Amino acid sequence: MDVVKQGMAQHAEVLAAMAARADEIAMLGGWWTETLAAGGTIFFCGNGGSAADAQHLAAELVGRYHAERRALPGIALTVDTSILTAVANDYSYARVFARQIEALGRAGDLLVAISTSGNSENVVAAAQAATARDMRVIGLTGAEACELDHRATHVLHVPSTVTARIQEMHMMVGHIWCAMVDAYYAC
Image (cartoon, rainbow, N blue to C red):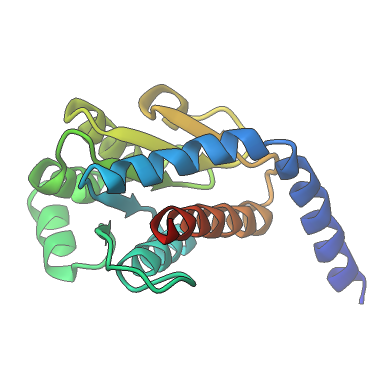
């Protein structure tokens, strides 16, 4: 029972700290709606649990979150095994997301770069590639200073060093952004 209570207490503490960042979260959600309204695409990348979050959020755009609306362009750079393995084999694993941004990204698109540490080499490389294409980059990371701080347009730091708590907040924030998109398209 102590593990259960500890996990819930940690979650509640980090959630309360995130509530203080509501304006920052809203501003970044505005980037989502601006990108989509201008005909742009939102790309997502991450490793492990962050890869799952990338896929989940792309699916919310292409399918739907809550509101019935048109399909929206969201692409998870984590899903094409042929591209991932070819690029990893021919270049390096550090290039698997950047190479896709180089092929598909356009000025005005948005990259959501998810990394609990903010130092994942392939996520940082994707942010660099996106910036070179005049794309905005939102970094989703944990509390500590990281490489994405120097590569993303804006980094939303979750005030925790516990991977599970960071990932929980990344998905919560992602869902808030999806709700903002739904609200925009409901108008």
